[in-house]
Image (cartoon, rainbow, N blue to C red; front, side):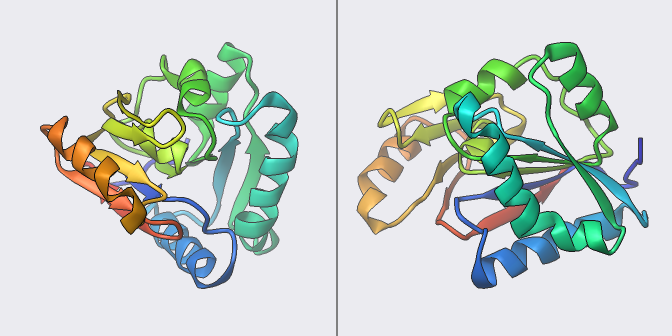
Length: 195
C-alpha cells in the first residue's frame, strides 16, 4: 500500500463531474492528490454500491472512461471495481490508494461500507453525491427528503445537488446540525485533508 505523508484526502462532490470543465477540475484535483503521495502510480478502486446491482458494471465503466482513462493510459493508475463480498472488498479497500464512490442511494452504500475502518492517512477518498453524503456526520437525503446520520468520517453536514430551489432543505439541515454545513452544487466539490 502506498502512503501519503500528510493524511487522508477527501474530495466530496455534489454530483455530476463526468463532463466539461467540472470533469477537468476534478481530474486535476485527483492528480494533485496523487502528487501529494509522491507516487508515480496508484491503485484506484471504484465503489458502485450506492446503485442497484444491475447498474454496477455500467456506472463503473462510465466513470472509468470519463475520469480515469487518462491516468490509466499514462501509467499513473490502475483501476478496478469493488467486489461486494465483504472480505474481498476489505482487502481491495486496504490496497487502494484512491477509493472512488459513485452516487446513488446513501442507504445502499452504507449497507456495504459501514464496517470499514476509515484510514487516518494514506488514502484519497472521492465521494460523488451519496458517496459524499455518507462520509458526513449528518446529511440531507434528497431521495427521502429528510436529515439523516452519516458515518461521521468528516466533521461536517452536507447537502448534495444543492440549488436555490433546495434552500428550505438546507435550512432544515442547519437546524439539525451542530457541525459546519456544506451545500454542494452539481459539478462542485470540496477537498479536505485530515492530519
